[in-house]
View 1 (spheres, rainbow, N blue to C red):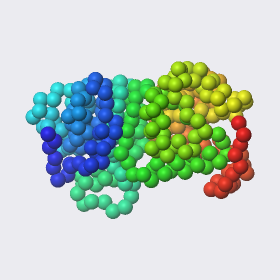
View 2 (view 1 turned 90 degrees about the vertical axis):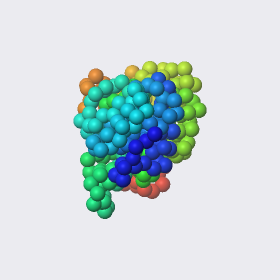
View 3 (view 1 turned 180 degrees about the vertical axis):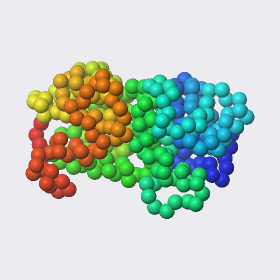
View 4 (view 1 turned 90 degrees about the horizontal axis):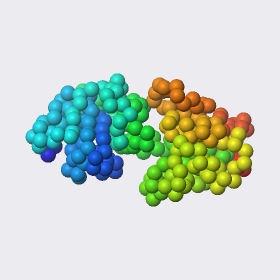
Length: 295
């Protein structure tokens, strides 16, 4: 049972998101920008019984989830009315965070204040959602977003440019079939020379062994020409440090670094990788077909 209102409704995208990132039965999960709570309630209907938080800025939306939870006597879902930009309760303890955030940065807005907040990044930008997920998730946790494909296009465009001048590879923790499928479905796999998954490599980040094995497989001898790029300080960046490699922390939300792991570089936009990876001539030819480097 889901309670809705003219201002707080849901569409098929919310249901697709819920099923895409469905948590395991006992995992701790959060539905960010939860609205009427459809994602959390869909998880419940599909068997999730672990702690679950529905975080919503607008009191009317949070009240709808509270009513549904009380009506059905669902004890493991906790509606929380708060601003995710400042929310820090339960930091580092969640296994899964999902969000169907506002999509639009500009353009005409609804005269209805609730509709405008739900559709435009007035009080919650994509960077805010990522920062909240970064705070809440434990190492190895998953953040799933439902967003317009233009953002993915930006990522693929950067990968296309970099693949013209460098050898790209993925080093990731997880299950082989799952990770390969995700990379293929997103289009990222098209730009990768190889993918190294912890399940198959019998080692996981931040252990240096998975990086050493990947470099051997790629035929890389000079480690000074290697840059580890990642958004996880404790896995990606620490792993690169452990392997004696230069590292670049991708931090689009400008999250604070606790200071335990210090990356060689820090960027907020993937295009900032260009001057780190490319030579001057290649920088001048961004957008054109460039000669690939050899490892």
